[in-house]
Amino acid sequence: MAEQAETLRRTPLSRDRIMRAAVALADATGLESLSMRNLAQNLGVVPMALYKHVANKDELLDGMIDVVVGEIDPLVPDAGWKQAVRARILSARQVLLRHPWAPLAIESRNMATPAALAYLNSMVGTFRAGGFSADLAHHVMHAMGSRILGFSQELFDASRNAGRTGPTDPAPPAPLPPEVAARFPHLAEIATAASHDDASVVGQGCDDQFEFEFALDLLLDGIERLQQQGWTSFSAPARRAPDSH
Figure 1: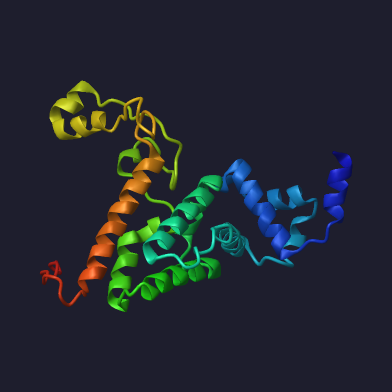
Figure 2 (figure 1 turned 60 degrees about the vertical axis):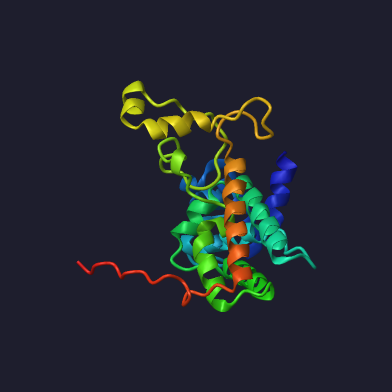
């Protein structure tokens, strides 16, 4: 163990090594505990050594996000747009399950990182190559939202996972208290309906992966129908502009 630590200290410090060490530290202890001091300690260097490669923590987070996005599988060659998009989004989800801090980091940035921009650009390119107009591709990206990067904020997980973002471990939904169920009977009804039976391929409870894929397939099926119909925002029913006050 001492020999490994000594080898680590002798390994030349680089930006890539710093970023990968930061990802590993965030994986182990969470994003909130990540600091330049802790990272330097893990790398066996003084904090000032990091600043020769990384200007500040914001730049560190950007680099960490790029490392994570770089783990997403490339587009499937010679596949239709629907298959290619679905496979890549599910790959992104698996990556974020390995790095549960990443969705919060992604959402915290004012601008997408270079790797994230390249990923989003390639996804738009897939839609365009699949025959989508720029107009439809624009609205599709809005509809997909964070799901295009493999995560979403789950409505029914809001109270269970307060303060957390991204994929979460599946857990059976807690039953609503009787007085709440009586006041909101429709919510109570679907809360119990969400429990899959023993024969279900997704098992008992409200399975996060199942729900993610269910919503993703709903979106992709609807998007495919719009694309086949030659839909444009100009042909959509006019909507009244919201009141300005």
